[in-house]
Length: 133
Image (cartoon, rainbow, N blue to C red; front, side, top):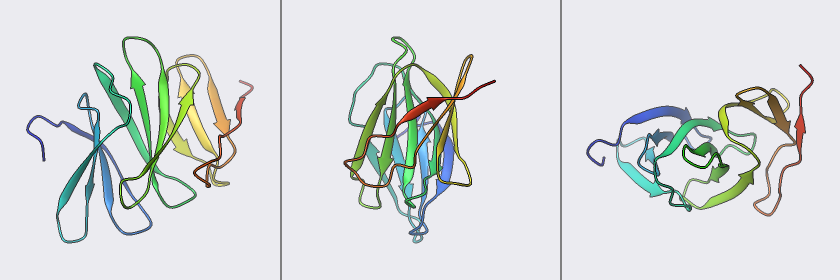
């Protein structure tokens, strides 16, 4: 693992691997069953990126919520077992996420909660719907 990688959030995926975020390093790591770590750079290079949350999506892959602390943008990045990424740009800066029982992503912003339809095909772009609070 890269020195000062600051592992932050971790999630198991369908293939039995553990995926983790590296806070402020613009990368995610994969720990396989044999104990080997492979690191993958996120596709957009942001200064002071905060990969705050990683979850197992309905498709069995790891999904990372990546936020740029300086410009307020966020991406949702789906990562398969080989490290191939599907990036979904989001409107706004989100601070947390989870996967609901129906497979939808639930995103937490400073003053709101949003959810999407499940993102399974790489070509799909989720539809985001603000929640009523």
